[in-house]
Length: 376
Ligand code: NAD
Image 1: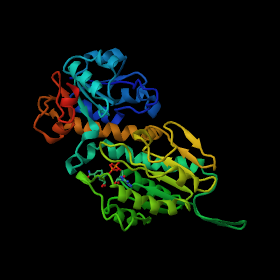
Image 2 (image 1 turned 135 degrees about the horizontal axis):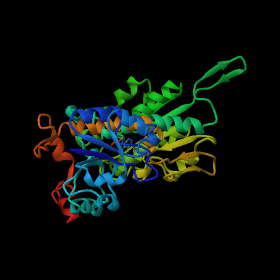
Image 3 (image 1 turned 90 degrees about the vertical axis):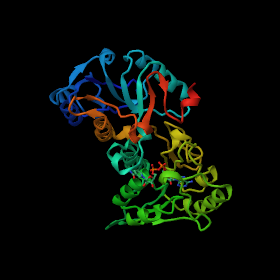
Image 4 (image 1 turned 45 degrees about the vertical axis):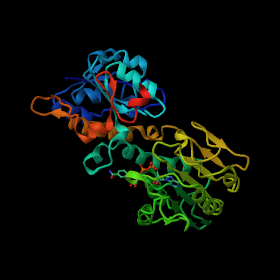
């Protein structure tokens, strides 16, 4: 069967859904792999690298013959119009709020899988795109902050005097937050972190950072290890604790998300105003509504009191070469579970829990329980 990896149409998307390593593995599963010309260029993978791994470089028209398409973003209507009926498309689909686009995918007759719905169970760890990409985003957030910060992060004791260590505060200690903590620690900062899940405390401490949490908020763990939304009283207690702390920080990195909800507002205008001139904030949740008041998606905002608020979008794409390798591997690991190794062809088990969790559309219909009604 034919497998196609396009160049992403979205100009802000430098990642690619295959690597030379996965091309080799896909070929040995029995697929003929076609890669669109230049698809890997922005991730530092040359067409010739893909060719050496066994792929054929093709134009976008190759999509019409593909049985499987691997990509980053949900296919646009123009892409969908080129796919053949029954084609399998595996991507990050961002379906919430885009129900009409999901319906269009069904109408086009493609079987669409949303990688971000992969259950976070041991068996699917190697397929977890949220983790592989959030980890890099957490790393890059600290690098971006350090680049905008006009002081050194580590304490430096020199003959000319001592530079104090920067104080970094990480809000939300999930996958991105934990990597941000580790990265800031490696750069020598003094790191504190907060989360609403009590279980995060131990992980924060094991990375050598101090965990900060209010007494009022015992634990806001929700379903599946994610956070739940806080009550108004809890939000108030959190804001009080954070307000004092933030005023003393040099760098704040926010990563807080709640599944299916807008990102919680953690840093108010007043808190930003309380920070010293030259401080830097990175809002990794900016694309989901933002944790920080005043953050703007795609911009670095400088406030009246000279605090920079970084709102870069697609932060994993800012580490594109690494991000693509991991993303490609995640997709391969998932696809491999849907291949009949003897017949060397796709054999989707509709009863498999990974398939049930991630399949959005199939056979002309929206099949995912969360979108079935919205889309019809
Ligand atoms: P996420 O991206 O949904 O959220 C980021 C963090 O923000 C979370 O730690 C969350 O608790 C926190 N948060 C939410 N509201 C907040 C608020 N008001 N104030 C402060 N922090 C707030 O989370 P994630 O990074 O995807 O990780 C979620 C959980 O899943 C973690 O426990 C993680 O360890 C776990 N996980 C498990 C697996 C696996 O078992 N395969 C893989 C990845 C992650």
